[in-house]
Length: 490
Ligand code: GLU
Image (cartoon, rainbow, N blue to C red; front, side, top):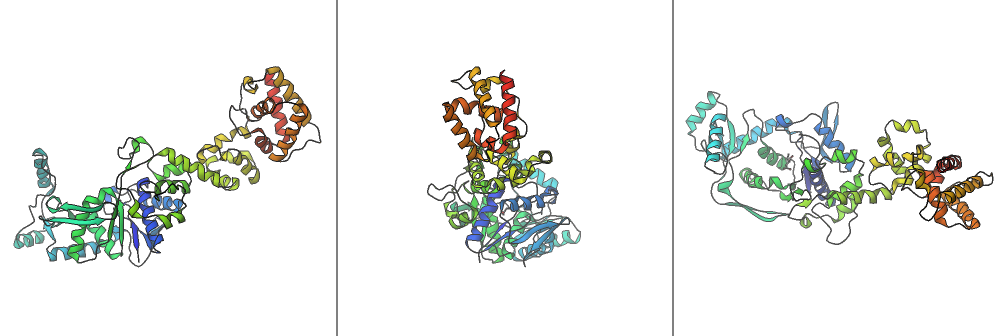
């Protein structure tokens, strides 16, 4: 069985790059009828941020990529877990890491290190001064057994370090990068277990990926150089290694590493801005991957069928917001007015109460602008003219081939005609038919009538067409707005 895991550290919001990692993990699990697991890597307690776990879970839920196992929820200030390999919060697994650190010590794959922080600082300083590679200098690698025993019985603080072989190379085939090779002499003797008994990421990740039967380790590029350490640990334990896939970096348009300074990086920011999950998922899936032809629209289910790690690019993927906008517009248009109306309600906030509209009427209002905006967040302002006619300049009412006198004449005639009882257009088609007939009967051109009508109804330079607006406003409001236009013109 194929198992993947998403292993966030609860240090803040969910980054769009992490959403991509989670998505690719999810897709690989789904396309193989496997399991997608969520493990929380909170071994660096200093960096843990309150509220980060529920925030990550909420963002994944919003995106539709929920874990099958592991941490699956958050209730009463604690995680909700599912599965037989838990706990899935690393801070609850300290005993397991200690046991495994002991196995490594016994096997000679790790060693006690009693170096003080002061000594380590001196080593670092010396290395910097001499422009040497940074890393532990191996001082405690070959300590005498009696010295170790004495230190331990005297309770001298220690860490457990990886005893990385210093000759040869570590090679592995990454599903994305291909064959990768690291010279062991440059791989640091990483701390595995800290003085406070907490493991570091490197020990915890290997132990957990093995005990949780993870077959595919899919993660960001930044972990590639740590992989030789992990591979050595698998070998020390005598465990089968998972497949590794390191995803390319996300880049700003100027090819620098994607950073907050150049725009939003939190999934929550995109939710707040009114992007749809379908759009963000489709967009994120294409950051570094494409199906090899010109298709661009993929639902989550379609992605699960077509996605493959082998087709992920080796080099960085540019985060192009225009493309995200393009996806969002596309997916907004795919939704019915009612669906968009429902999704947009939170964006109206309290204002919605003042509108006192029936939901069908509200959906019609939303339908006016659904195809014209980029995000849900733009909709309240975009449809504002329906509720409150904006103040506008009389000049706007005059079509380029017309005059104020003609505009007054036409709008007055139109108003008088509309005021008769027999004219009761119900919907857009009706409005189009009735007003269209009237235009023909009067031998006017379309432009000379429809331009001032549209401006009178919207109060805006650009807006949806007059028939659509009239259908949403209804005859009484149309008459009022024609009156306003005539007052402005006179
Ligand atoms: N906790 C690590 C992170 O947040 C996970 C790295 C991995 O997937 O191995 O980046």
